[in-house]
Image 1: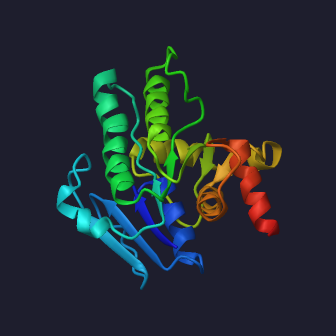
Image 2: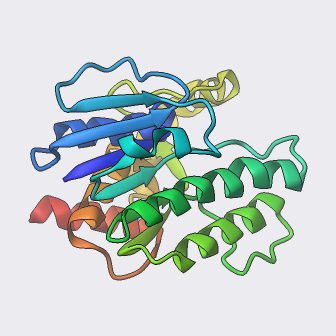
Length: 226
């Protein structure tokens, strides 16, 4: 497979990139983002692209991919709905619409979030915007689109949060996460699990488009047995 990753420098994206680089059946991994990952692998190619709402300038470099893992994300804190919509909905759909036109048979995987409202009627602004984003992605005629809704994610293998506030929160909660994973094994995921599950749905599909934390955990368990 040839895999395209957006957001490979974020915490989730770092974990997903690692699993793609380790996968024997992934021949090429290409990242798109504002900054480089700092990784050096023969099958890794990187595109530094500052305008994530427009891809005309780099379309020739977005050809011949089997799957896209979109791991871009931004906190809605202190944002008005219009601003968050631009950062979440508009940004995601700009990439998705470009890729669907170039690759109608592509598998598209979008990292959404637990609590997203598929009806887009929630009182929570971010849940409404994420819901609209999910619905717009499902309306695009990809081969298949999968919406990952993880909740708590433990970073492994050197993956780290980009923002100082998230790093501080993780430093405080880090001792509790292994215990929480034992107690709530279907709800507390790791970056490794998210990456493995994305690869699994790219290879074999899934029974449903919306995948909550428990579904992601089950996909990992099935992949480990196969």
